[in-house]
Length: 460
Image (cartoon, rainbow, N blue to C red; front, side, top):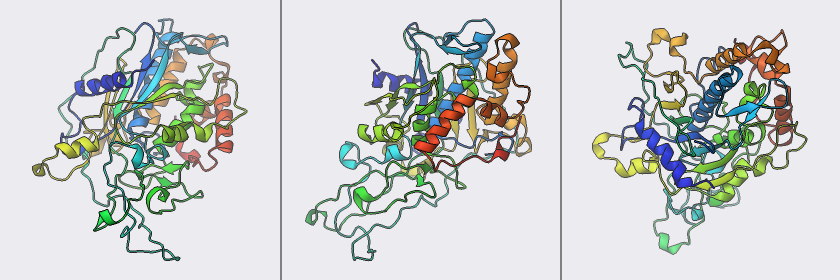
């Protein structure tokens, strides 16, 4: 049985123990937190060198992949792994009995899971709209309508690339595992978050009954599909549709965290590369959300129901329905808590511009980035290994190639015995069962999911 508050406390405590570098300023900057925990019975650049998606959920999942690669390297080298044991097929591995992974996020994932009716949330950052004076505009039939709300155009402060190398060096974190839960295997907070917009109120709210309203998401519907109606109240958003992420800077093609969690619920969170080594996809046994506007029905729709009808999946894949839980504990650096603790002298409240990842590995457990690169690098270092995050596609690919080279050639999975495997794209496409599952998911549930340009996947 998963205790949501225990999970949240583990995550918050670990965050407090991390160095101050990259953390938000209390009372002025807010952020989101996400983590992947291991449970056991005993305890867009053409070269892939930029971290294009810094949302907490994505950072946490990538950190988890780092951890899984480390454990697989231990397994194939004969050192023994606390996570994996040999499976039936040659070169394949599966989870040790009793081992599972759960996902924590301090706020509902951006996108579909954040479109929560306000009546279902005891914590409402915005009052409900009323029937009158919602907007001065009307539609063609004379009905009142609300103007489309766009993300704030105010520029938020983000860490700049320093002209000189910082003297500070990151220190390794050595944490012991104990009892039934290990320390966090991956951990992150992000540099972007959901929008919360203020609703317009009637001058005399007592004269008009309130219109049921929803918490809105800044994530926009993908082109080619249903658009948001932008009607007052519950009719503002379309639900169950794919959305691109909100955030600062240039428009992104990255799908919302709700969409990515739904995808991981069918394809597994291990990704295409690690599926070469795994007999079965890896799924989260539970998803825990911190205290925030929340609806179990909405989470079920966003993460599970949208893909519930997908069928004809290859062996080893399924539609996973994780346990959905909410904690009563709120992240101290949430937007709501930041607003409560803010003092006028601190200036304008903003989202924190850095992304922090902590992973339970020996080498470089801590990774702090800003604008897709390591925090504090000089402009001169851009485009070099010195500027790369350990979580960018190129670094994860290099870690995977290191895993392959550590594997006895006689024990390599059949899919990795081809001589024509060179680029990142080659290795991804060679994971045929994974690609077949992705084809079924795209065809049956997500036909509008944007495809990555091949030119962005040809690095090695």
